[in-house]
Amino acid sequence: MRKDITVAAEPRESRGKNEARRLRAQGKTPGVVYGTNEAPVAVAVSPKEVVRILRSGTGHNTIFNLQLDGREPQPVMIVDWQNDPLRNTLLHVDLKRIDLSLHISVRIPVHTTGEPKGVKLQGGLLEVVTRDIEIDCLPDEIPEQFIVNVGELMIGGSIRAGEIPLSGSMKLVSSADQVIAHVVALKAEAAPAEAVAEPTAAEPEVIKKGKKEEEGAPEPEAKKKK
Image 1 (cartoon, helix red, strand yellow):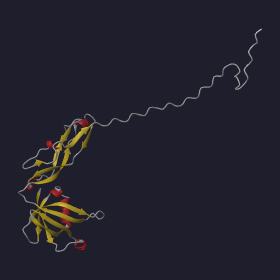
Image 2 (tube, one colour; image 1 turned 30 degrees about the vertical axis):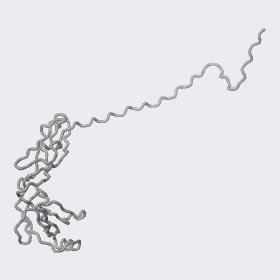
Image 3 (cartoon, rainbow, N blue to C red; image 1 turned 135 degrees about the vertical axis):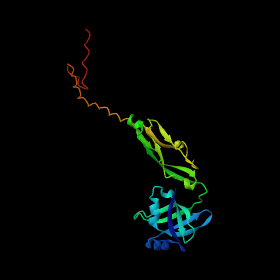
Image 4 (cartoon, rainbow, N blue to C red; image 1 turned 90 degrees about the vertical axis):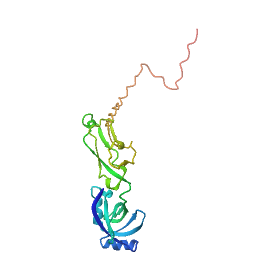
């Protein structure tokens, strides 16, 4: 989305880590501008202005004007940036010149609204599978976001990327079958483990009447025939 924002930039004559440290000490961030068949230009910009754009509703899809060294402002987009993982400060930024007459591909956030019937009436669970889709459109027609209503979804129902309404020059680049959100049944709770039967007390040994023959005792002699 194009915004009426102008960011000033200064050309950099030298590059390297030492130059980058010097710029950051002065409260500036090193960057580079490229695109539209023009030579890349090393620049220095205000990190506060770049971060403000990144944190806006349109984020890195924002098209704004870059004012470089008194030249005619050029529309640009932020295509890459690096942050210090400890201080969370902007270390470097890549800016791309934009030809407003040519289509570009961008990723647009997708948000859901409404409470699905499958959740209210059937006790299901809404799962958001995809949070952005890729489209192709003219720079001036980049939307800030897409909002899809999931209120009619029942268990087993879904909304796919191909169902998101597009307008103007927008064309879907992501797969039309890509699931945005669906309602699924809750998994059945695990059945309680069967009670393990407690071992029963050993039955008492039945003692037979009569004297038990001792092991190895001689057998009685057979009666003699008369």
